[in-house]
Length: 175
Image (cartoon, rainbow, N blue to C red):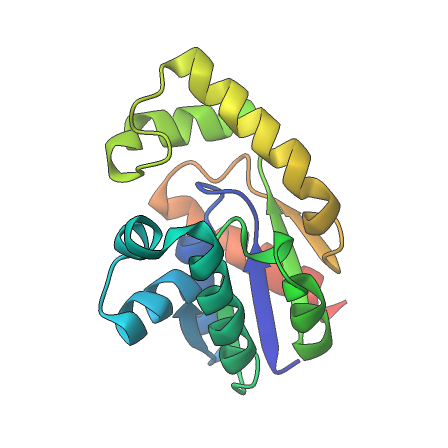
């Protein structure tokens, strides 16, 4: 197992669990969105605003292919990454995909508190946000469900829960 891809909706814990997982198994950690931002010296929001989603998805695909060649790496993808181009197949061929699955009601609690940091949801009421989350997960699940491992993160509530979750995930990956 040279590469582990963490996929799932925003707020499921991809970056938080990914960093800890990488540290525990001696891999490097890459957050694909941060990798894109570093390469282009722009935020994801700036790339979207200047070039549109289509151009962003091209960039994302190109850089996903690049990091998919790195050895001993945990890669956290954006929530939409698996759903465009043949990204899900790029990940399947390069390593193990872990779908971090979280109930929409749990995501609502996590995302509503910090919604100002996320442009797609910052102006949404609580009801609108739940509808948005549910609708997007429904669209994306056919891609997410292609993962080799499905790992529930509903009970990931506090930072102190991260280590035990990662230990459980490592057990699942070793099977």
